[in-house]
Length: 302
Length: 302
Image (tube, rainbow over the protein chains, first blue to last red):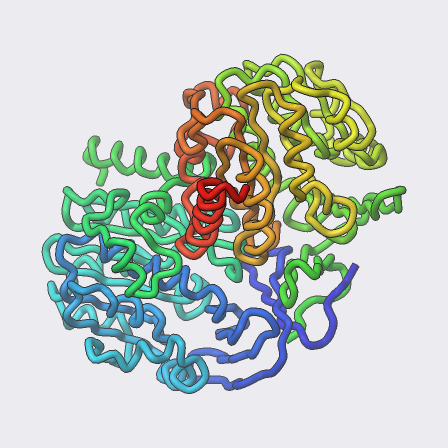
């Protein structure tokens, strides 16, 4: 019954008890303990290179495109003119790589707290790390929360590409973080944050969505299929300062030729629309939050 | 790096090399070798009971609803009047449970080759096994291929709920099987078959889709998220004898009240539509097949 032998990496977390994904490993390319986390880079047998932080798979070469394309283009294509973008986290460089593709984006600022992740990605994960040297990008090593407090009303879009809400990233899932993002946005600005999976942690997803819904004029939840993430998918909460935003209908629709030229393997306008359609149990859970928040607003409790 | 200890079940297959899902096991409820396969029933720590055939997870109590609802309601809601339904395989009873919910369905015939799976499901997996005693259902133990040869033009919908295309189920993924289904259908009939995952086996998916496309007037591919299946999702090929079928737009749309009364946790009309929207890389692979088959037909090669 226990098929796994030496030579497999197994991912275990209290966020998804009783289930574990394992990847067969050909070689450990790098292993270190930075000031913030354990950093591990594996050459896997079938999924290319993999970045592991504190024992959790952050991305594999085989499917990282799905996550990076979606966390970037869902908010970018929901904004009428996304010129200046802030990325919080995203140390592997994959989100910067995607954001830079959007022709309206003129400048990208990225704030990553762990310089070792940046170095490791540039050295061992060039398919993502190359994003960190894009000419549109200005890279800061530091705390995203603090950075935003010093840069008010500067950004059209803020993307938070964080690890999961255990340990150092917990603060990025709290209401105060969403308020901090709101203050760093220009009028009409949009945020998009990694938000876990409705299949393992619907309570956490619902709480994060509630924070977003309470902070922004419009809020929505979408997901992308990512086979090497827990439950095979990951969610995103999106918030907008503009009451006119309709996240489910992209404002910017790229042609097939444009998408080909961007080397897009997951995102398209129809994928954008479908990403907001949730299984019934999940939609009901999130609809309940919207309804409760609206009730509170209407009765003056908020 | 190897986090898994005794007490975990690990799923390994040549269909998805280098990756393995593991479930923590509280108790082995049943283990036997039938004439056709190894049958294992586990009480898992976090995913309820699980049915394992030849080492591959067939369903867990936590997420089987997604698969069963979708493989049943995608074809049923694409047919104008699905009165008589054939289920090939589906020995756990979950598909029969779902098909019986559709108010137009008057009779269901199910042909399962392994009587031991039926017995095990009734005894250990009552949440699915109860479907096998539905008054609409007539159950046959035998070979689906042979059964269809003896029952021509009888069914409105044929659902093939098989294991994966290794070992005994290989024949259910071949062109001759799709031709056999075609002959067992009434005019305007529709089929839906389990068809693997575009993330691990796009070649097999494409081949199965091609068989379906070459055999039926209309063919399409959809998927459902199922966290405990490889890559977290599973695909379905659908074929129709009617040129008017548009799989992406359900003919029968149930109200929220009806869906509640059916205890539906995954399926809705909007989920139906979104299930046909594929990531770009997958859509391109399948579009290429449609284009090639159409070219062959136009030049008389077919």
